[in-house]
Length: 122
Image 1 (cartoon, rainbow, N blue to C red):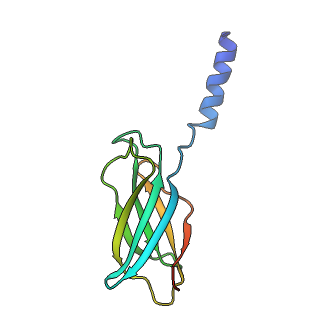
Image 2 (tube, one colour):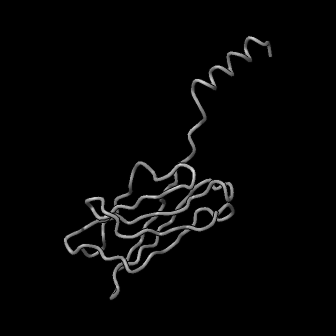
């Protein structure tokens, strides 16, 4: 490659910055209400690379955005994609007919968007 073309490619790379990582994808949400609150089973997908970059949590939010519960994920799931983890004992306000789910990555933080989940039976 001629030096001029190589310099141009390097300049374009520096101007555009690094490629954005894939956000954590929420693939499925299931929930059931029990005597001790709601249980949520959330299925995530993320291109975990190891301990330095992995999906490290998800939250259940009330419709107003307040946090009802957080599920911390303590290790990468490189060879287990997608994967499902649960969180129980969530007190959902009686007047809420839905919740919002958002996911987090160790490197990129919380996803910008949320997934709406309509509560069964409400």
